[in-house]
Amino acid sequence: RGAPVPTMLAPCLLRRVILTVPLVLVVALLLAEPARPDQEGGTAIPAESRPCVDCHAFEFMQRALQDLKKTAYNLDTRTETLLLQVEKRNLCDCVTANLLN
Image (cartoon, rainbow, N blue to C red):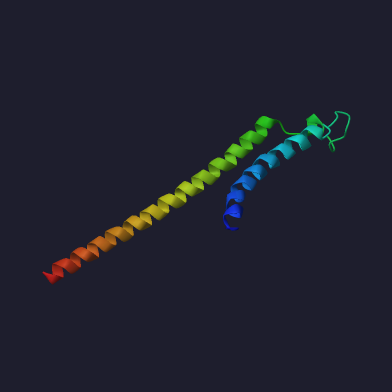
């Protein structure tokens, strides 16, 4: 008779843990001090020496496009190789079938 109690308690405890963990996280976030604007968050790079955001986006898109082109070329090459293998296999099967007849 002692065994059914722990198995019935397990889902209750699990539910309690699932509800308690997010509650503790929310309370911790509410009690944490927000960063003040006068706090230094690292060294600032002057705007004149930073490339613009558009330049970064353009360079990123260029690299992504180059990667896509390489991937497409590799896929095309692999597809051609597989198609040639299939054609060769079909041709061999056809020749073998004709030789048997």
